[in-house]
Length: 507
Image 1 (cartoon, one colour):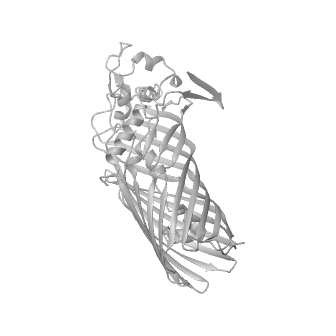
Image 2 (tube, helix red, strand yellow; image 1 turned 60 degrees about the vertical axis):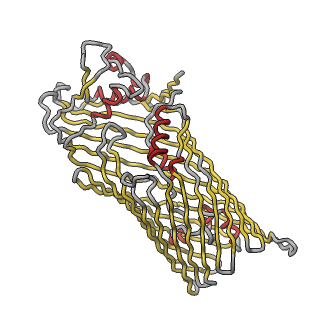
Image 3 (cartoon, rainbow, N blue to C red; image 1 turned 135 degrees about the vertical axis):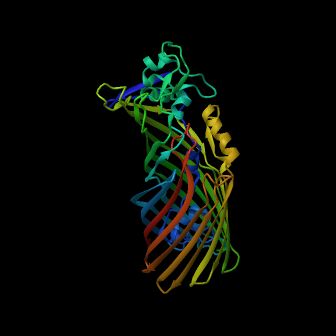
């Protein structure tokens, strides 16, 4: 059964069968832990698993809220700067994006037990919001491909995927876009962009197609991607302290995401006297929204007045997401239009697909901290996460099953280490940090390791505190120009520069 809604001039079609093309990057997007939170937390690269006493620290170890001595609230403002440098067949392109956002806000209430006969001398309740991922980003890759065209993407669908036969010519000539499956829609987009021709154009049952793209090579190709949105989390936390030596905590997390990803792929041909095809532009806008749930438990032990050890478990996050997709093609073909005008095939259809589920991997963190009295501290966190456990559901969907198999075979357990330090002098605090995160891939050519540095400063006014932090990270990865049908990739270097300002008040 299929429902079609008409609103604002657009057709919205909803299919009960799950059929949009999902990639492994969709799973990694929600599985990564980005360095977010308060300025103090960021300045020490998030190494707070055995430190606590910061609202963002409860995301690492839920027991951290039991180390607060006073009721406290913190709000943080961050400036995000993303710089993407790509290299595609020798052509280097740089794109930057800036954004300003309130990325953290929360408070903690501390309740002390005045009964001297009870060892449970304190418990705390906290509520904290954080923008786990700011998706605002721009990416541009361009260059001259000497061999391969993007026609492979459209031919892959027109001639049939491994489990399906090709689409009939009479379907391409007569069907409405919203009546087709996602696979056949991609074929129709390529057909109306003059990317391929039927082997037998007189046979309505023809289902075999050949490329209409010139074979001389040297295809100029460009991918311009713009993403906007966020992945946020609201954490409800409760923690308790036993004789100020053992601290135990629990988190219940509500996740919500809102992402618009617009990809424009362009290809042009220097010489094509045989077919007249000069250039093709393929635009896809995907809007993804939904929510999820996770929980965390943790403990911190104060071995001595200086030495602290921490252990925390973060469950998988179970997301329920929905995609809305809109596509079009723009073609310049001298022999296809009498007036040599661009040929625009825009079905004005927003495809609303059935929701699907993503389960991210769990995370285990061990922590050590050494506190130098009132002078400062050094902290180390070590985490493990098995990215091969990323799972898409429903499992009976062929596309999702192949992605799950790919991730099980190619992703691996990755370690992350965070080191942070703080030095205090009177009301001033100086902070610094380092983090290293292994690639989630078994062969890290697809995505390299992440390296990050951070630093910051804080001033304590007594009843309130002001903190400033700067964080830098760098990672290299391969980027597909188009989701399938073209094996040539761009090499991307992503550099993040973030400045965070936090204000904390005791009450």
